[in-house]
Amino acid sequence: MDKFIVNGPTSLQGEVTVPGAKNSISKLIAASMLTGDTCTFSNVPSIADTADTLDICRALGTRFETPEPRQLTVRTESIRHSEVPADMALKNRLSVMMLAPLLHRTGEAAIHAAGGDRIGIRPVDFHLEAYRQMGADVQVVDDVYHVRSDGLRGAEITLPYPSVSATENILLAAILAEGRTYIRNAAIEPEIIDLALFLQKMGAIIDQQVDRTYVVEGVKHLEGATHQIIPDRFVSASLGAAALLTHGDVFVKHARQRDMLTFLNTTRRIGGSFEIESDGIRFFSQGRLKSIALETSVHPGFMTDWQPPFVVLLTQADGMSVIHETVFENRFGYVAQLRTMGADIEVYDACLGGAGCRFAARGHKHSAVVRGPTLLKGAQVTVPDLRAGFTQLIAATAAKGESVLTGIEHIDRGYEHIDDTFRQLGASIVRQKAD
Ligand code: EPU
Image (cartoon, helix red, strand yellow):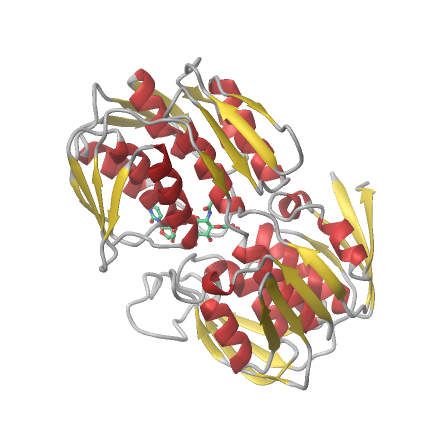
């Protein structure tokens, strides 16, 4: 395990290129396993999450090559095993996405419950219920999902909440099912549209209606396809927040305005500056930041993944900001450590935001009050999850003195060579073996 030693403060300056989206590539690879043909992806992020996904696929029978950087060719001629064991499943959220390829190609799946960031309970009940509705036999024994089907059938599925991965999982199940599937109250995140576009290239018929409904007409056969992955809008926003927090000036090449509308509006509301250019977005500091009341939501709302880096930015804004997290119940896990760095943040179990929150009266600390501006100082911190880790990293870059970050494997899961990137932008950061 490695750690980062960061000496601040540094004002980040320069240019950085955003790779493809972490939350697209893993699902695209799962989709590629629905055919025995070759699929080719470009703009592939070189992150630990991609490697963990490929480990699972390799164990099931996928062969892959990386002919050049950011290119990936995958082919699953046949499925060797219909089981995803615990050691692989626990590394990320992908294991449950293997249900569709395994069921369509072998008729059975035994999948250990997924791991991933501990930002909430993260059940997969919506996924499993949808497979039941499509005619599969689903049993859960000791954290293993045992699913069998002699052919999935189309169904009318209404999700209790617009879950990203449940929507994606049902799309994968429905495209080779018999008949038509309606997915209502579905998620419409850009990564899901990216998946739908790739599936269309493979031969799927997926209509998107205006009201969060997808209608999928099952087809008999899918073919190999080639796809360029969309830029990672969470990495783009993270780097934007880093530039503003450190009073810097960073051109985030390939950041796409269309996927970041709400982030950019919110940035402007607090007084953050940016310029949209033809091939990216420049974030720069100009004047003081203002406080805000903010609620996270599903797309096109303010994404939960933008919340942690934005909160550290709000520690530098004048006045009191209020944040209501409505997507994951435990997404303020980084706050205690930011407080040791000097941030003035309190977390509450009350809903400090709109009505209808799923976490009301359940005791989860899912609201925060941030008072700023506060001087950040270096500290020893342990990274609890991916976005929290990036947040701690930018706090350390902005802070006076030395910070030591352990648990940085969480950051490596989703941010490509982040220490090299930060060094290029002027930060003093060293990667060392942890003791
Ligand atoms: N939920 C259920 N039951 C389900 C599925 C979801 O109750 O069967 C609940 C979750 O517990 C959560 C809410 O629904 O409260 C939303 O969860 P969702 O399924 O949308 O999240 P996810 O698919 O597990 C993906 C991303 C997350 C991102 C969220 C929200 C991947 C691999 N992960 O998670 O990304 O925060 O959507 O946009 O696509 C990250 O990149 O760091 C990350 C955590």
